[in-house]
Length: 375
Image (cartoon, rainbow, N blue to C red; front, side):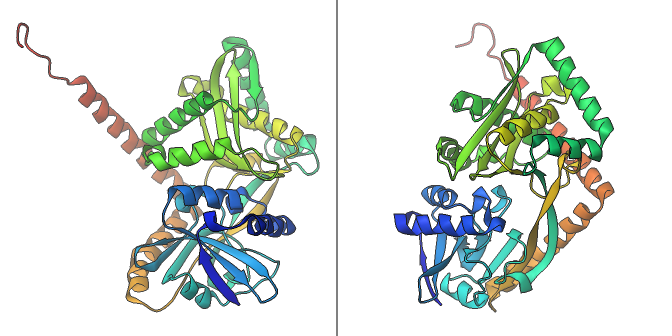
């Protein structure tokens, strides 16, 4: 195997076309986070983005996008922002993983959303987890019947709240694939508020992430595009989502809603409307990503699988990385495996968010006023 490392932006059009062809040939790779367009966009914004081009002597058989950080620490492309990563290759390709790391100048590669079962990494998987999906291959109505079977009570309650929202706040309207940047700003504002309110780090406080979202929103092609959806009550936006799609799959990324309308469960109402619109647009699947949200179990009609693991070459940097990451990953797995612990952790974060918001509010209100007559 010949492995050549370049930046994604240096790939020629023939190489990009070959990447797309490899992705289309393997259903397990049908995820926009594995698309060449996402890799090129990341490369425009981050200096540490690379891709290994793998040639078996007859031609290119695979692409391995990754991030190379200090001390040769390797991370998946997009890291914490993404819900899928891996090797884009001909089916069944097995590369000597340590030779791959040497070529990429990596001491360690740590993954947590890898396409499960890829031969190159399978021996290094420490855990495999389901990612719930909304599957429309049998049509929207068939999917809705599965949702109803999952929980008739939940569907009945949401439909009641949907009618109540339209009756009390204005006729409901759903917009699919909005190109309006102002609508995107509304959604990101809600999401930032949610991050702060629930004690999470506000991802959009990093300008490059906002720029990445803008680049993705501007993408419009048959194989890859950003999809912005919004639910309106009258003329008022109440819930939305921004995700990425291939020709047939949308990946859930940034859902959010206006908390002024929380009593109507606008986020779930939006997801039902989004499912119908996506199916009509030719989407066969919405990948909701692994994670502990109860609504996913209710809306799912199938599952994909992603893996966690780590591969390394002997080095001091790899040893230090192991001490810093592996215990944390194990603790996170324990929490995710136990609903009671997950809910407790969520409550703690939300409490932290409330305290932080209160402190920030007090700080903004305690402005020292200049005495009357002073200059």
